[in-house]
Structures are given as structure tokens and as C-alpha cells.
Length: 348
Image (cartoon, rainbow, N blue to C red; front, side, top):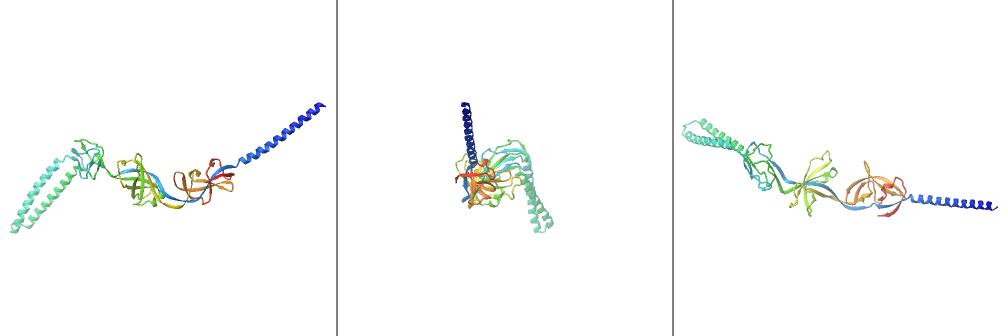
């Protein structure tokens, strides 16, 4: 009898434990379903006023820059290229040997004197009919012909001289006194650095907004100052490979920090937009061919394609795909799928 009672007690205990386990399983299942709703943060899209600007990289270049080469071949007899020094326009930098040309010039000058004297005497004889008009005219033509030959020789002598084409600073010298040079020989370079330009490229979508006279700002590494420049010209067409438009601007004020070839950060304000839709940059999901954001709609996540515009340090402009009042999800983007249940924990 005692064994029967003992067996009944064990059976009752097992049934009690089984019932409790069933209740715990139901409770755990309900809690798991509740936890499937992901808490997220949202951002309400609204219009704001922004300055539409672009930030690109640029390079400083001299206002003028050229390679110095002689026009003809010859031996250097005078070399006045002081490396790194400033020279004024017209300064003689290189003189080639011109002894043969100078001899020809002297010969022609003597011939000219003889022809002129002959022409003067014949002109006097013509007054008393001592000579024909034809002979006087022939002597006059001879004088003109010798003058033309002298001009040719003087031009050839001028080609033996290499002079500074503008005020500027000379670069490194590549030849020595006595060297034989040709028009292919690079003597040195000269750069006008008291004035400078800045060269940069902008995406083609901004090409219609860039025009001569437009102001811009730029900075360089190593200088605490911000510099100003004004657009002087643009290329006639967009580059086919990069789809960018090349732009050149003249620097308004040059100081010792501005060295040609220096990298510069250019910023140009294109205009002001009072109805721009700006959202946090973290809300953008880049795709292979487009960009997406996730909207909060009735407790679920909805993926939409957007077109972006200008950016700043933390926000990006939305050109299409969103409307004022939409709620953009900004957290948990990697864990969301279309139609996933979400719960707003914070709205900005």
C-alpha cells in the first residue's frame, strides 16, 4: 500500500514539473517575439538653408612659366644665368658666338656707305643732265638692297642672344660657359611668381555655374592664412575621361608661403538654397548603382532610392527620393531588411 502511495506521489510531481515547463516555454516564446522588434533612432526630414559650395583639390602654378632655349645652334661665349635670382624683362642671359655675322655686317655697312656716296653724286649729275635717270634709280635700288641685307644680318645676330621674356625668377642652369647648344638644349627655366594662378577641376554638373570673375577661397599646408582668388578662365570643354571641367583662377595676394606646385584645398560658394533637404550622412546606404535610405513607415522599414547633392562634415543634401516630414532611420541599418518591424526609441 505504501509503495502505491509513493508511486502516485512521484507521478503527481512529474506532472506538476511538466506543467511549469510548458508555461515557461510559452513565456519565453512571447518574450522572443517581443524582442524581434528592433529599437531604432529616426531623423525627421525638414527644409533648411545652406550655402551650396564645392570643395576640390588644386595646384598653384606660376602666372607665367617657360623653358629657356636658344633659337639657333652655337657656342656659348657669355652666360648670365644666376640660378634662383630675379631678372627683369630683356636681361641678356646667353650670348652665342657671332664673329662671322659681325664681319658680314661690317662688310655690308661699308658697301652701304659706298652705294650712298655714289647715289648722292649721281643725283647731283642728274640735275645738270650729266647722267640718266635710269642709272640713278639703279644705284638707289642697290642702296635699298644693301639695307635689306643688313637687316637680315642684324636679325641673325639677335638670334644669338637669349634674353628674359618677362620679369621672373630663374631656375637651375643646365649648361656651362663654352658649351655648344642647339634649339633642343634646355638652358634653364623662368617663372613669374610674384603673381600666381591656381588650377583645379570641378565635376561637370557644376560647369554651368563656373564663370570668369567668380571668387573662391583656398588654403595650403604650412600656412595659417586663407587666400582668395578670382576665376580667370575655364577650359572650352569637359574632359572626356574624368568628366571634369578644368578651371584657372588668379591669386589676389601672394606671400612667401605660396610656392608654385603646392597642393591647395579650394572652396567655392555657388549659391544659397533655402529649401534644401539635409539628412545625416550615416543614414545613406551606398549601393552598386545608386544610394538608399531607410524610412520609418507605420512601424516597418521601407527602403527608398535617393539622389544626393552637396555634403558637409555631418550631413548630405537629398535632391530626390525624400519629402519634408519623412522619418529617416539612422541606426541599426545593417540589421534591417525591407518590411522589418521597428520601434522608434528616439527622434531628432
